[in-house]
Image (tube, rainbow, N blue to C red; front, top):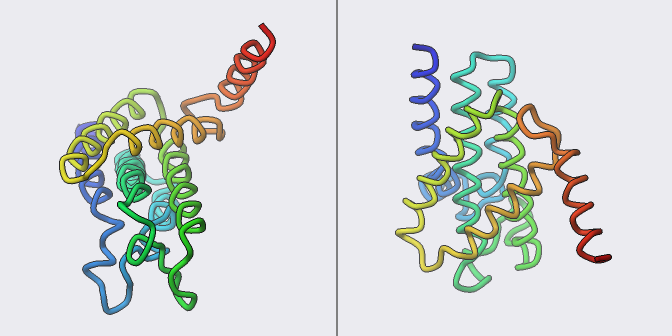
Length: 188
């Protein structure tokens, strides 16, 4: 029964996570679209800190939310053009330029994957979260002009996040294997 609750929490939080970055379009009194707060790792980080040490179903739901926000950010990384509302808005600063906006979204994408990896407890949890993220990607791709580059960015960001120590993937071993493979490729 406990695992069923965890799966339900994962599904609900994944649905929320897909839409969470665009909450700034609902709360226009406080936020501007593409707010630094909502289009980042900050809300998933806050939730991760809240659920730390809590029951499994809460942590799995928070991991699902972090992965879903990563999916949303992957699509936001490829707007038609980098101007106007495509740029990240920082409170008290205004809109960041295109380079900083890209760096912020890309860094947040990696951070969301890393947060999700830190919240799962085993490979079964990770598989469930990845299935939920893949489902979210398919749902989001139906409403977007492009899907290939967001998919590539998700894969690259996951690979980078997998190098960060977490309970499921030995990031240091992965990084050592990649470094060895690159070394062999350079020196055949």
